[in-house]
Each structure stands twice: as structure tokens, then as C-alpha cells.
Length: 100
Image 1 (cartoon, rainbow, N blue to C red):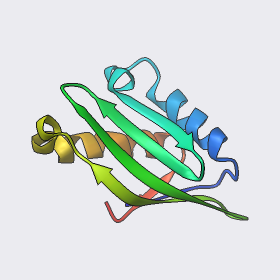
Image 2 (cartoon, rainbow, N blue to C red; image 1 turned 45 degrees about the vertical axis):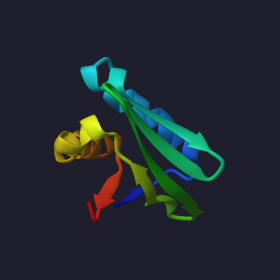
Image 3 (cartoon, rainbow, N blue to C red; image 1 turned 90 degrees about the vertical axis):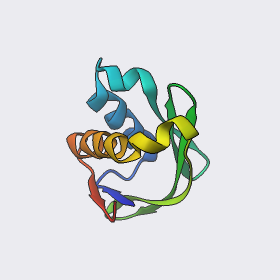
Image 4 (tube, rainbow, N blue to C red; image 1 turned 30 degrees about the vertical axis):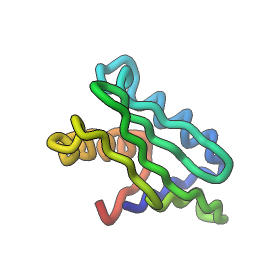
């Protein structure tokens, strides 16, 4: 999965993602955070899954590429559905997703 945002600041991207989730139920289960040059998406409910995206900053914005994922056993049957919801949040925040 690849994600592209026009913003050059990864923290601004994280803020836009959190704002896009608003007060919805998904916001209680999904967290977006930066650690070094990596965006980490954590899904917590009946286990914890993490998605790690390497961040490259370019003049065109931030580009995130999925490098590692750890999916909790309880989340595996719902992976497609949860991924779809996360993609919608990314798109609502102004990001473009490819290769999901």
C-alpha cells in the first residue's frame, strides 16, 4: 500500500488523519502516529495490529509506503473491511491510496 499527501510535514498529515476520523467509533480503535521517519497505524480492539509506513518527504509532499504489518489473530477475518475503512479516512483527509 502506498499513500501520498500534498503536505510536506508528516505531523500535519497525522493531524489531518485524526481530524478526518472525528468522533466516530473507528477513532476509538485506530491511532495514527509518527516515530522517526515512520508512520505507525495501530488498531486496538480484541488484540493489537500495527501497520508501519516509511515516510519520504519530497517537494510534492509526503509519500508513505507500507513496510511491515503485524495483524492480530482476531483481526485477520476483518482485515479487508478495516483496511477499507482506513483507506476512506485517508482519502477524506486528502490522501491518495494505491496498491491496497
